[in-house]
Length: 167
Image (tube, rainbow, N blue to C red; front, side):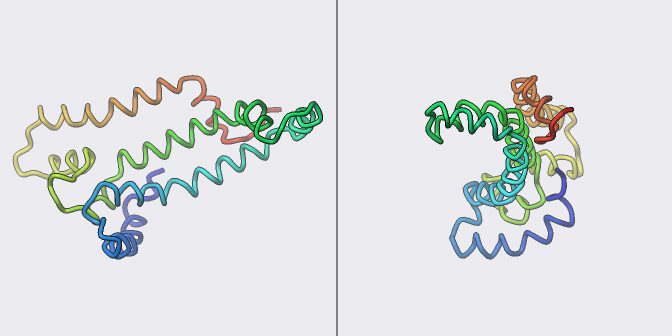
């Protein structure tokens, strides 16, 4: 998922810079959230599409024949079966937004708006590195990711197949 970092981020920086400038939200975390959403949503859609294609249509048809409405079919049949893939897609989208800094550097220059990943990178390149502050910030960056990953638990591990069925 580091595909938006490095060279790819440089290619996306200019269009997002001009677009967010025209909207007047370039120097805000709201603009950064919109950028990360624009990157994560297509990935999540394709991942969830693959997962929903793997749901046996017989189960959905059987529920419909029993009188379930389309919403009930989705809630009782489809959603529980795609929940692991949904968890992984959400986790990966969070991970990309949480750890990405290249686009953030291009879009935000106000010191009060920087993200933790930007602060961590900025500390690394400082002439005098305060290792205790750098370590504490690295821990602040890592803890939410670890809590989320362990909170997802078995669902995250099951969802790593991205909709591929086991035979």
